[in-house]
Length: 255
Ligand code: ADE
Image 1 (cartoon, rainbow, N blue to C red):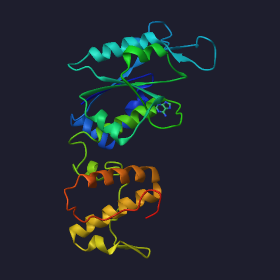
Image 2: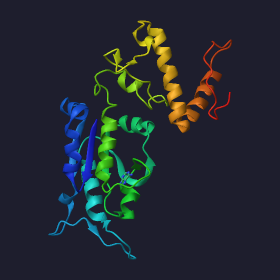
Image 3: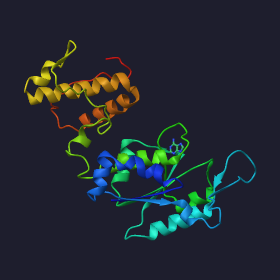
Image 4: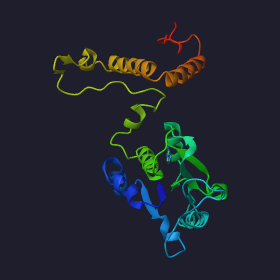
């Protein structure tokens, strides 16, 4: 997969992505990452990419010409056009489902918003989708772009050591992940749960599933409510007579 990032601060994007899983995936050719400096598409001596807002008000606005020209040229470079994403606080809030959607296309172009925002004319015609990483405001869209690139790359086939890692982890199936333990079997009086050293794979799986569900119910009632409804719906599809399956309490805590 190819990922282009258009930014005023290329090092803010390159530096954090030089480590660990993302670095391994890029050097293995699993992800082809290109970081572009927006100032290469500026047209004046000062290389300015922003200006004062019409109508007055605080802050500066990213001007349309460098952005639109850069998006056009970068998109035309390569055999497939990218899905063009504006990274900004007004976008749809990133979830693991959106990350999977982004990881399934051959090419992405992330455009990092900055200052007070971008000229509205950039949105119409040059952007396919807007993504925010949460309901708070960062000082730089680059930080959000790094989050998106990291989350996408680790889903690409071959990026993680084991193909199970991305399936097992929190959010992958709408639940938080179960607790993990490693050696020693007892630390400062706290022992690992017996089931994990039982050697009984089916019991371990059942324990992990139950822990996942309970942890989600306690920590993320919003996720639990969605999962519970989906679980109910999937049981409705089961052929009758239904196999006996464990019942989980409904999201309001009763039952
Ligand atoms: N730029 C500033 N805040 C942001 C956020 N929460 N998500 C994406 N881009 C941003």
